[in-house]
Length: 87
Image (cartoon, rainbow, N blue to C red; front, side):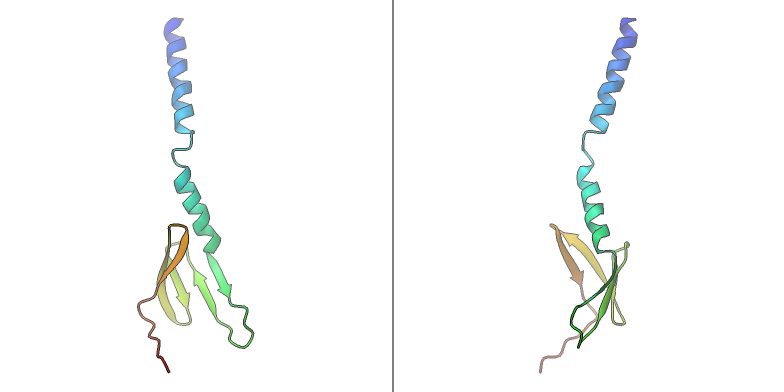
């Protein structure tokens, strides 16, 4: 009887530790990433553009395919193939 109580106690302890939030950061990051997934459009009516964000870290702006990530809670879009000219 004592042995069964010890085993049940360890099982309860294991379940509590496993579900105690050790993986909360990963869930939060995944939740934050899903907030950006989809197609976004700017609000300027004279200059309308859309940008699409995909779950694999790819984003599409005009005909350019770039990458995106969340770094320290901020959206970072890595633009390598778009050249900007200054007038």
